[in-house]
Length: 316
Figure 1 (cartoon, helix red, strand yellow):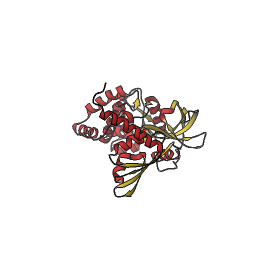
Figure 2: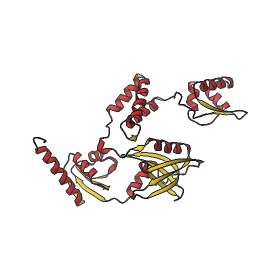
Figure 3: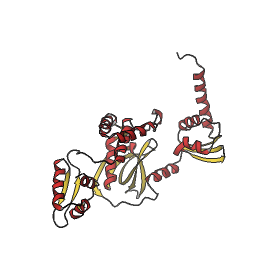
Figure 4: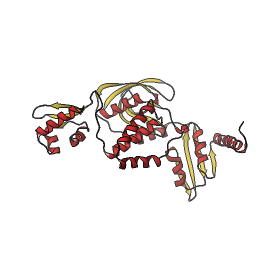
């Protein structure tokens, strides 16, 4: 029965003969086990006849789930993130669900979960992006999974409100934000949408044949879109530190080019100078700012505030 449930949870349609052969059981045993699953709360559709088969569908309540080890750890890690507030409205329920998942974990998986938590840095409050509505996120995820077209209202970066009809491809979590990569039916082109700017999503019930992305994957598509967006500031800084060390701190938010064994060039395109200032302060290495002039002023102002705080004996 556990093997049968594991196969049905792929949500594909299984011909009865193929499913029985896969489990090495008779058709009678298969039908009996299907009935047992139904008694446990699983909704299993059956098609009779020579070409008949079975398929698991969503029911009126959530029955027990079969999870592989890696899936259980991944779910626990995701619940930790939601509990930290990255998805609006899920903090309390995520904590409750996390407690249940961890309580059911065998000791070996708890050790893996503890190791993951101890070796992962949680985002600081200043690094969090806008929270997204949990209902919107799950609706978009469902549409991506089922290849179902969807409509929603969207506010662009220029504050223009539009109504979109799209074929959703994939959700991408990048940096501090969630993005939906989709084919825009009205514009006849691929687009990425910030999920925190999406409202009133509606499933249409219309299935579509998935198209091929113009890039390797959805993450690459979103990153390419970042590079194409005009930014207010082009940051260029020479850092007296090895390029690999600076790259570790900068991550995906800038380009680091080595110019010597112990020196490199850091380049970023940003709308705000707050992030470059914090980044440069965390490098723990000498640096010289080539551009823009506004970054020099921002660093000087930050240094003055920090210097004054360090010199003050008492905060009154």
